[in-house]
Length: 569
Image 1: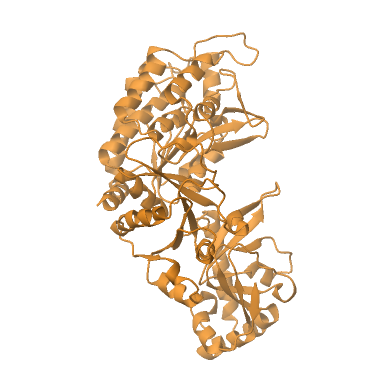
Image 2 (image 1 turned 180 degrees about the vertical axis):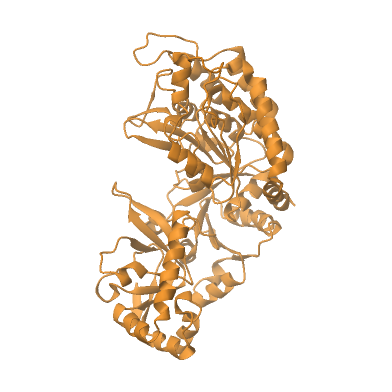
C-alpha cells in the first residue's frame, strides 16, 4: 500500500464530483475537499489498514472494488458486500466512536481518496447537506445488504488464466467472445500488451465496455499477477496439474472458478484436477450449449433451478423439467434437497426427460427401494436398496464430474446446520440427502452425521443464490401440509416420519420463496410421501402447473428463453 499527497487537486476534484456523497456542493467546495485528503493505492488482496491517520476516515473508491468482510463467529471471514468504484466506505466509523465492525479488503487493485474525520467535520460545518447525503447512502446500502444485492456485483473484469497449454486461453476467449456479444454485451479482450498502463486507462476502457477479458496464458509473469489482481472474477483454464503461482492473498478473498475442457459429448473426468473454491464449468469443443452457459454465468444471467424434497410428490419435478425444456428455458445451475436433489442430479448428468422418467420408474415404481425392513435400532429400513439404486444410476461419479454446477443439501446433526455439497462422491451425498430420520440410516461424511436436508432446508434457494447471480426458478412440492390420504384420518408412523424430512422451518421457507425469481407449486396433496405408484399422476401435475406458470408469468419466462436464444445465436 502506498500513500501520497495530491498535487493535482483539480484532477482529483473532477473525479470526486461524481460521488453522490458530495451532491449539492459547488465546484469550489469540491476542490477544497480534494485539497484536504490524501491518495493511496491498494493492490488486490491487501487489507486497508484503518489505524493512525486512517482511523475514522471516509474512503472514496476511485477505481477498483473493495470487499467488506466480517467474522462469521467461527473464526472465518464472510463477505457481506462489495463496494465498486464511485462509492464510499467507512461511513459508520466516521459517524460513530464504535470500533470497526468490518474489515476492508481490496477485491481488485484500488485507488482510494482518504478524507479524515477532522477534514470531514470542517466540510460538513459549511455544507451540512453532506450529512444528509451520507445518511441516504447508508439507508440505501442497508436495504441492498438486507436483500444481499451487494454480494454479487456485476463482473466487469474477468481474468482467463491458463494452467495448461498456452493456446487454451486464446481458444476459450475466441469462443466466449461471440457468446457474450450475442447477449448484447460490449466486450474487450486485453493481453500482455496492455501491461503496466495507468489505472485511469483501465478505468476508461471499463467505462466504455460491459466486460473486459484479461487473457494470461503464461504463468508466473507480471501480466498474470496483474490480471489476477485486477479481475472481479478469476477463471482458471486447463487441467491445473500444479498450483498456480498467483497471489495467495488475492485467492483468499477472491475464489477462482475453473473451466474444464473436454471433447465433444464425452464425459469430462475431473478427479485428477486440483480443487478450486469456486465453480467448475464444463466446456466441450463440440457442445455449443456449454460455452453459452458459461457466457450467462459470467454476465450474471445464469438461470438456477431449485427442487424441493417431498418423497413421491417430488416426481412432479419430472413434469416441471419437461415443460421448461419444451419452452426452451435454459438451466445453468441446479440443486435440491432429498428427492429434489436426486432428480436434480439426473438433470445435471444431462439425462433427457425420457431417460429421467425411465430411471425413476425403474428405481421407485418397479422396485420399491424403501422396503428392506430391519431391526429399528437406527431406522426402520436398512437403506441397502437405496444405496444400490444410487450406485447403479450414478456409479463412481463425483459432483465435480457433472455437466452442470450442482448442489445437494443435507442436514448435519452433529453441527446442527444444513450443508450444501458441491464436491464429493455423488451417490454418497444423495444417500445422505434422502436419509429420512427414522426411516433410513444416517450417513457419516467427514466425521459428521448427515440426514435428509429437508428437516432444515427443504427449498435451498439461499444456497443457489451463492452459486449463481441470475434468476432462480424454485419448485416447492410441499406447500400443502397434508400427509396424503383421506382427510380426518390419522396417518401411519411411516407417513409421519416421511413428513418430518420436508418440514424445514417456516421462516426459511418464506425466505426461500421471497428470494426465488419464479415460484412453481404443483398441487400434489393427493400424493402420499411414499405413493411411488402415483408417478405418472405427480409428473402430469408438475407439467400442467408449469405450463400454467409459463402463461401467467409469460414475461418472466420469455426473458429466460431469450437468454438461451441470444447466447446461441
